[in-house]
Image 1 (cartoon, rainbow, N blue to C red):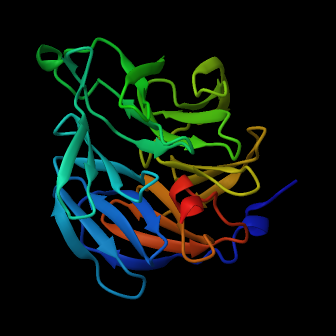
Image 2 (image 1 turned 180 degrees about the vertical axis):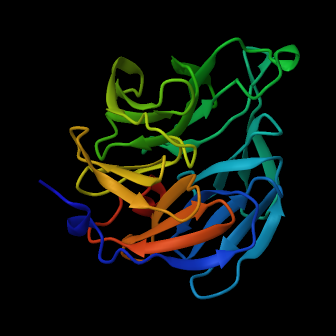
Length: 286
């Protein structure tokens, strides 16, 4: 059976930045830097390994990030109840803030598929009932032509990740029942069926199922109670990468995609892994 020692080059975490309130939304850019956000400060940062983070722009509760096929940064801005795109000139375009004429709840995480479509989670529990226009929390799909559709309804959908063939969409459910669901998709990206991939319920308050990534071996890395939980492709838990702070999200980065970049409350940590993470579709079109 696989052990964490088979996955990690070392168990020593490297703290590369600190002094934030609640970090989230990490993503690696092949030009040699990471983006991440400090949700509570409403700031988007860029970090070149070995240097101090640099503020890029203000956000409205910026959270999950990814790149579209053109390398433009996509960001879920929860406080603004919208998903935005930062253009190459630095201007910001609102991609979606409504579904069927009703305001989104609180977009949380977003990923891009190889066909250019974007999938994002929209939990509703943190929006006061009087301000809630959409009754259900859901995972949505933005088609390449801009059309928006519901992929699946959830209790509290949070982090997202694709399998290598993009026929499985993993969704972390954060509140009430803590688990990862696996949505089986057809070639067009619509859900065919769904199943529980892994139970993440645990005693403790230091983390919940949240940010998630998949490595080249198909293993799923998901933040949770105590740190980052690592699962085999069949859902068997390998172990937990223990974190000194509540860890909300992870990203694979570095030129070889073998650096695990961890956004953990007030700080950013990294640790080296032996198997690279799956490349984003944008990396493949460069």
